Image (tube, rainbow, N blue to C red; front, side):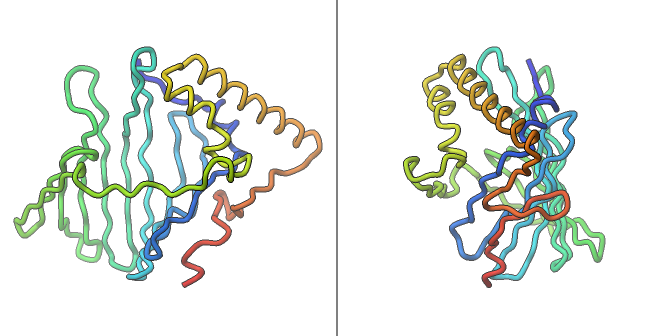
Length: 236
C-alpha cells in the first residue's frame, strides 16, 4: 500500500522551526534555505543552495519526493522524482531522476542522471544505478567509472546530548516518538506523535487568537523561504 502525506497534515507544519545545523566542514555549507510549498502530492521544498567555499562555487538544487511504502506491513521510504542541480560559475547543470519501483517487478532505489555543459549544450556525462548502491558513470570521451556508495566513508552527525538541547530542538522534541519506533511499537509512537502535534495545534491557535506571529530562533524569512540567520559564507 502506497501513501502520501496529505496537505492538511503538512499545513500544520508551516510554523514549525526547521532545525538545520551548520555543516562541520569549514569548506562546505548548505543547505541554507528551506521552505514548504503547497503540497497536493507529496512533500516539496524550494531550491536549496550548497556553497563550496574553497572553490567559490554555488550549487542550486532541488530535492526528490519521499514516498511511504507498505505502511500496513514493514514501512519503508522510497525516493522519487526529478532533481535539478546547477552552478552558474562553472556553467554545468545536472538532472537526476529517482525512479520509483513499478507495482510489478523492477528494482528499487534506481537513478539515472545527465550532466550538461550549458554554454556548448553538450552532455558530458551520464550515470545510472542505485543511489544507495553502485553507480556507473560514462563520459563523452568513452571513459567509465564505477562508484560503490556502500564503501564511501560515513561521517556521523555531531550533536549535543539531549539534556543540553532546547525544548524545540528536533531530537529532543521527538525523542519519545523515536524511542517507540526503535522499540518497534508503532501504536505507541503514533500516540506520542498525536499528543505532540495536538500540543502544537493548541499553541498555534493561541498565537492566532492573540495575533502573535511565530518567531523562529535561528531563521529569518526571505521571500517565501527561510534562511539561516548566520550562514557560513558570510564569515568568509
